[in-house]
Image 1 (cartoon, rainbow, N blue to C red):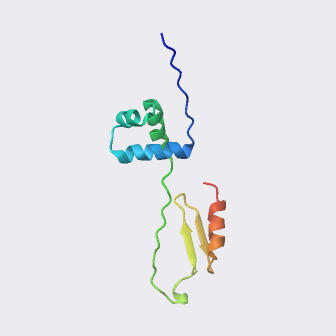
Image 2: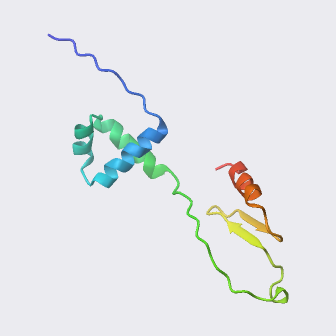
Length: 109
C-alpha cells in the first residue's frame, strides 16, 4: 500500500475571491472547474459562498445637476455623498480631492 501525502495550500482571501470569480465567469459547473484546476470541490464551494456573503462593491456614478440660483436651494451643498448604509456626507464648500479620499478611506467598512 502506497502512502500518498498531499500538501495543503493556504490561499489568501483575495486569492480565494479571484478563484471564485473565475469559476463563475468560466460557465463551468463548480465540480468540473475544481477538477480542471486542481482544487478540492468542498473548498471551492466554501469560496463561492464567501463571495456571496461579501457586500457588493461600491459603484460611483457622476450625476450632473441643473444649475440653479443660490437662492433657489436652501441649504446649498457643493457636495453630497450618500453611502448604501445611510451615511450622508455634505459640504457647503468644495472639498479638495485628497481630503475627500482620506475621509472616505478613514471610515470603517
